[in-house]
Image (cartoon, rainbow, N blue to C red; front, side, top):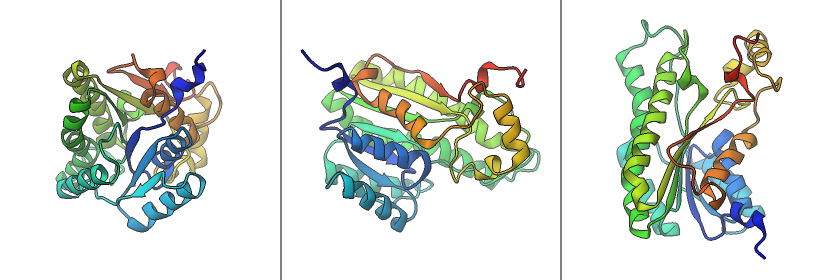
Length: 262
């Protein structure tokens, strides 16, 4: 009898995770390696990528390869895709986690360059990598593509409007690619975290008043840890999630089901 826990294993799978030298991406890479996958660690800084890969390889020798890339550069992403394929062969799992938010404030004040950077890094870069890696997935007739979006994409904001717009667009990118790639056996889904204790969101959760407001409206009474987002990604990457397609899994402790904490 087959152990039902085997459907969560990722043995023999190769995964590329962007923005994986720290935070949510790092937690996903570590969990994938724990589940048997080989992982590509990628972010902008080579030293950070190597540190994370070395940490994973200390536990799982040969499981991680560091390949730095700037998501804002299509040439960098092309090189990332080529080196990842050369290093591991076909990529079975693509996790699009890297994102940026260079501006806090009203959309009436954002510059064209800042808005363009948010959309290019958080949306267009994801599209580029899918274009680059999906053809090989089509050839092998299987694959899982996971976009790490945000519950911010379900709401308006006075301070991070460009970021939330880009994250809402990721929901639709996942749905559209699910329609296009599903017939080839490739699943495409989103994970939408609420507030997570990462360096990326530090400006929010380190501010006592903001943190209190978020926690007050969250039924579980706290914010998330990166590993809790990694669990959702692992489900979608594994055979356990093999019939989940074109969906957004919200991981926010229940924050989006309340009305202003009432």
